[in-house]
Image 1: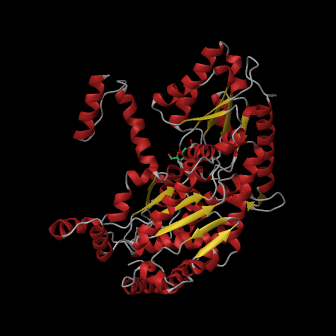
Image 2: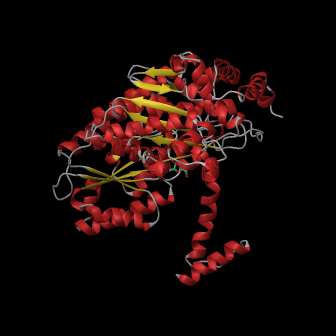
Image 3: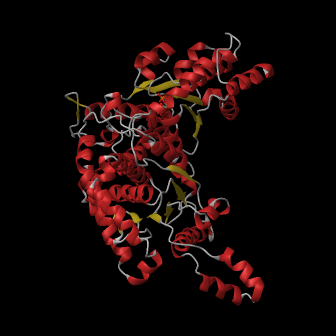
Length: 546
Ligand code: F6P
């Protein structure tokens, strides 16, 4: 047994879990009118209601004891201070430095990184103003109005999610497109939508070695040259964002068009860096800075608030409560905000690439669960597809709901309907429907006897299903910055408790390695090597069909 599962705080939670399972949330709400006040927090207009959880004052105390025992405070200080906490890659983890104010001092290997951060921000400001204002034009003199980001994973999902979320702030004549997949359908279909003379390609890759991105970038470059009939067009239509300036040079991107970031920024934590260039181009630098300011507010809150009032700590520890003490393996992200429709996909990488680990920081196998499968869809769409499982399935799926109080698109009764659905779902999940209630409803509908008894079991809802709810006024850049940083820190809190490194991703390497070996075999360039029977036969079928 690991030190963690034997620890006093863990053992106390195990014992508490059996006690609290005798009580439902419905009973807790009925017995305690102050529950919402005690179990909700506010930060700069972001309301976090966590009262609809299987939680008492004692539960919260024990969860926070576990956070303290695990050293969440100390590890937070280490991360914010630039310690090399990503030990398997020997790197500091400083996405928070990307939103630090000018004048702050954060040292990596004895060097303050904050001036560099602001130098690149100023470069981004100059470039975005030139492109948006039309001073920087394409090869034939047209203003650049189509941005095509070529990148994958962390070099795509964050900027894509944010550009979608901040559409109301977007330049009216600009469109942001994102090409990630090495499946040519992604690039080809995107290129059909853009005008080469008005297109700026951003090749985004932390390492600048990623197969998909480099392949898409080469094909996009060839297309541009063909469309505009000149190699000279490339320098006006291509820029890059990377930590690998040597590789961007070798690729043929003018060094003047390369925006830099650093190895202490994890790919999935990089939207705040120059990787956010598509965001800055699309919504403008002022809005990009507001996004950073929102994240900074959450960083300061995470650093300064007591655990009892700390959103990321509480959100993280609620996850630990369900993951490790209730056997939950998944949680749902359910934005009642269409503009956040890519948030679940973004959080999938953030959460699952960070905490999907089975060895601890010392390389020892863990004997407790460390991660969640994250999934979701905007409400109300999800209600008509998978909510059935959340309401009446055999497994508990904790869910995070979020909604703006006002809409960027006020139209008739739409927004009131959206909000009513959001609140109704969390109420229904918490309350459930008892046999007495279901029976009364069926009787009121005129049913009785055998027909009623037959239908009754299907009409029952177990309830006591946990949800968090986030409410905010309008989804503006500042609020979005807070929300994203909240999830970043929540994931970190959990990784600290689980004693894992949230910032490496060795698990994605093996598949890449085997794909590299299979590629020449599929291209018929080399003989088939020894594979298992399944892979060999699949390979043969592909070869026969090509
Ligand atoms: O394959 C996983 C990964 O390394 C992610 O961690 C990263 O966000 C993505 O690939 C893209 O990497 P890069 O920005 O170096 O192209």
